[in-house]
Image (cartoon, rainbow, N blue to C red; front, side):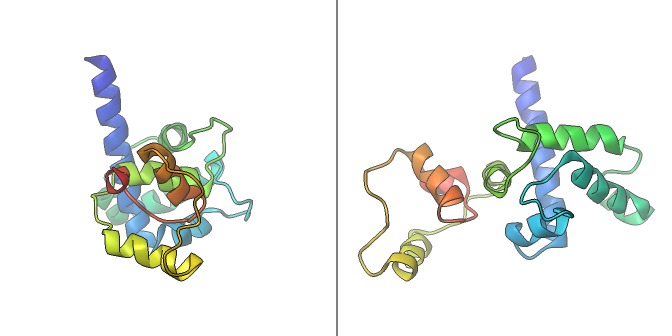
Length: 155
């Protein structure tokens, strides 16, 4: 009961964060750069708090995100706890890609994946040494290849 409730709440929080991201930047990488104010290559709780405060500053925009009347400090800590996979109090780009992808609808096609590898490594090459399980493949797509994919796309 309670574990499922926590998972559902995390999913809705990720979905809300993804909506914020999609409205502010053309890509996840651009959004990351937009929020990373000190250019440290990692999002800190203060940077997430700054983003949420700027969204709630205008009442109409804050309401459209469902943020009106919420405690921005607590909400930024919740977002950080969900996004920070390695628990170092810093959200790296790969962590943001992986967590946001959990709330993304599946959409990548095999043609897109093959095209990416052919452009990067050449015809018939993928740049990988061994056969990988789905989770390893997804981590490679996010960390090494810098792709925005949903976990279902690698299943």
